[in-house]
Structures are given as C-alpha cells and as structure tokens.
Image 1 (tube, helix red, strand yellow):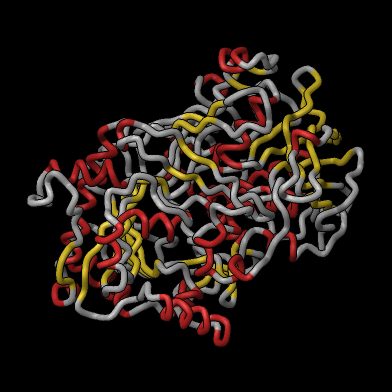
Image 2 (cartoon, rainbow, N blue to C red):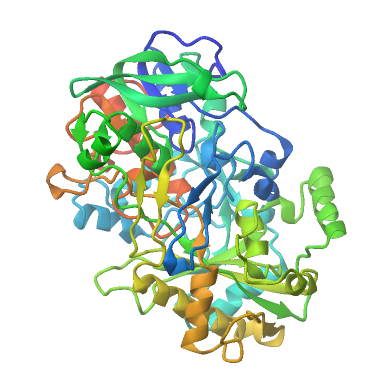
Length: 593
C-alpha cells in the first residue's frame, strides 16, 4: 500500500503528481506500478473515511465543510444574480470522495467530436473505451463485457443495491411511453446512451468507492502520499518544469500564509491533476497563462497560453410534482429509519444517492451537426421543491435569495411527490477561471456566465415541457396529481406560458458542478488549447495536465468517469515514453496514440 500521509518528503522524485483527486490518485498509482520509479502525490486536503463519506446517501453532509474548497461562482445577470456554490473535493480522493457517485461516461459522439472537430487524434470513442474498461470493476446486473471491465480497482454497481423505489421504475416506463426520445434501456454506458434506465454508481457493497481505491489496492511502497500539502506553483527553468513549491500544514485549519514554502524536484515530470479550477490557478501562478492577465498581477510570463478560458459547466433545474402514492420522505423520523436500515442491514435509500433513475435525450434544439445528447434528467422519488431543498441535496446548502417562502416549503416538505432534475449537457455559454491576485492563498475568480447564451435558456425551457409530458404518461398518468409551481411568480396563473418558463429557468438553474475545458486539449495552432493530445503543456517540457480541464468540450454526462479515463490515458502515455512496466492489463495497441 502507498505510504499515506508521509511525514517527510524526499528532496526529489521521478514523478510529482499534484492533486490527489479523481485523476491524481489514478495517475500516481499507475506510475507506481513500476517499482523502479519513485512517485510523490501531493494533496491539499487530508485523508478521511468517516461515516458520511462511506455511506452513499451521506454526500450532502460532506459539502460546504472541511472536505470542500467552498468555492463560489460570481453572480451573473442572466441568472438574476444568484450565487452558484461550487463544491470541490479538498480531501484524498478529491471530488470523487464527496460527489454523488454517478458513473456516467458520456455519449460516444462526445469523443468522436474531440477527435474530428477539435483535432484530438487518438481520442475517439474506440480509442478511449479500453481505458474506461481498464479502471472498472463492473458489478452491474445487466452489463455487456464489450463495454465494461471486470478487473479494475473502481467498483461500479447498480444504485440502491439494485432495489430502486417502485416510483423510479415508473419513471423509466413513463419516459418510454411519452415518446420523447427516451426509450427504456438497460445500460446508458453501453450500446446506446439515449433512453431511461436505473443508475450506475461507484459504490462497493453499499459503500462509496472513490479513486482512493487505486491507492488501497497498490501492493508497492514507492509511492509517497503527502496530505495537507498545498502546491502554490510549478518551479520552472526556462521552459522546463523541474519541481513544485508547496506549503505543508499540520492541520486543515492552519493559516498557510504563515507557513514557509518548501520545494521538491522532479527528475522526469510534473503532472497537474488539481481539477478544472485549481490546475489553471496553479499554472497562472507559475507564469503559464494569458500574458495580459499575468501582467496585471505582476507575474513573470513563462508561457502565453489561454489557461482558464473556455470554461464549460452543466446546469440543473428542479421540477417537482405531487403524487398519490408513497415516495421517499423528508420527515426526520423517516430519515433516522433510512440511516438505521443502512447501518444494520446495508439496505435502503442510503445505499444510493436518492436519485435512482435517469434519462438522456437529444432534443430538437441540438444543432444538426452535433450528434451527442444535450439533455439528462435525474429522477428522485421524493418531493424536493424549491432550490433550498435541492441545493441541500446537491451541495449541502441553501440557495441564496430563494424565491420560495419558508411557509410554502414547509407545507410541501412532508408530502409525497417526485422531482425531475433536467441537466443542460451541451452548454453554449462560456466562462473563465482567473486569478484574484498573485497570492496562492486567495480563491480564484470564477466567472461561469451561466445562461449568457440564450440557447441554454431555450434548452432548459424545453426540458420543462418534456418533464411535464413524462409526468402525464404511462404509469404516472394515474399517480401524478399536480405540478408544484412557483406561487411567487409574476406569471403564476400561466405556468405553461413562455414568460413563466423563462423566469423559472433564470431563477432556478444552478450548477451540478461539472466544470471542464479550462486547460483544453488540441493542436498548438488552434489558438484555444493549452495541452497537446498527449496532455503535454504547449511550449513546456516535463509538464502535463490530467484532469477534466483538458476536455475540448464537456461530455454529455457526469464528469467523474471521463476524468478517470483521462488519467488512465495520461499514465499510459508516461509509461510508454519512459519505458515503465504496468501491473494492470494494457489496452490493445490500437487504442493508443
């Protein structure tokens, strides 16, 4: 097993991996499979495996606490100036240790688009599929080995241990019956993504399976894992990365501004895996980024690259309905019952994420030349009305400036009902990550620019129509009694109107925290990319990026599984370049660049 929380860091390693999250744990573990190399993994958070982290249903308790960077996106007029909270994992395992554990790879055409439209040779679907399979320890009941792996560290299983709420099964039938391009399917990570099915989750025997599993199953000792180690910048010599500067805290509450910098050197390479927010932040603090922005903060320019630009993120929006049949309850005593079932029997809703079914569709608003799905619907067999409820489930907090009164919410909270959560998968709006100052202690400036492009508003408005149609179709026709509309709306008497839907979208859309594309992959001459197709930073030597920031465009689905795939590819590139051995079964040569 890796040397967790090593107290002393050697002066030099072959490889330094920055960020022990969804990508970093994978890259570090795979490199360390060769016993002849030394690897250092630096993680700003601590190693943790407490009860709320183990229990899948406990994830809302992990966010906005000490396992979370507690970031916020700047208010924007298109979303009526409300603040989107951005949970990012500050713990070993990163966001895979605090997320909702959905295992979604995206649509095959996402990767073909990376190859064909963005010039990322070797990143088509047939190229990346073997690397998805390489990570996977598939325990799904309905899985085709053509699409799934059985020998990897990451367990993927049916949510709620394969026993979803009966109403979740109704959703699948209703989506099929509604004739909205969401037929009932067995596996959205298999032959076809479009359709409705139960959830696949990174859960093993009723417990969360984060990317720490890659470290736990590593039987070697040449990997040092240093927690509470905050990397401030990459040390460069000309255009070559030679190490990193970091600060090591004793506890998570230490004031790092009072801690002196330390330096550790890399004999071979530095790999940044700090995520779509912190990787660009570290690069810019290192002098690698947009020249004008670096000069604003008096940072010497090492490489003029579009770091932090092209930010894409998924938006969700809750739509709720009352039902005449029992659903999961928000009553405190029922909550205790759910936890008791989990503790004593490893059964019940707490073995999953609460969301037990989902669907994907390509809407009529998707441009003709884009073949991937652009809409995802999460389905929850509970009445979560208003963003106060949904924000608590999604990221453990209340939405600021909620337009739903506490009295109105209280009257609904204990009723039976269901919640659709449509997600905008292919946003046209673009944002950025920038520095607030030259200090590594200041949080980055996140300008998401949600709904700045009207296309995104129209897709979410269209999703309301689709959800309403599903709620009236199939088995739901007999059990859904009414939609919960916004009674504070100026257009409350006409919820079908375009004006109501427009207002509803702008008041209720917020992030499902899938930021990506801030260190985009592509050819050097395209003007918008930061890394090449082997994840090497343009114009730099011995420096790579491996996280969801390298996506040329965000995938149609949750981003944890694709991030792990990207990390597997990065490790394969490094093994090939340096002639390293691997304990895992290698993908076929055709899957390599």
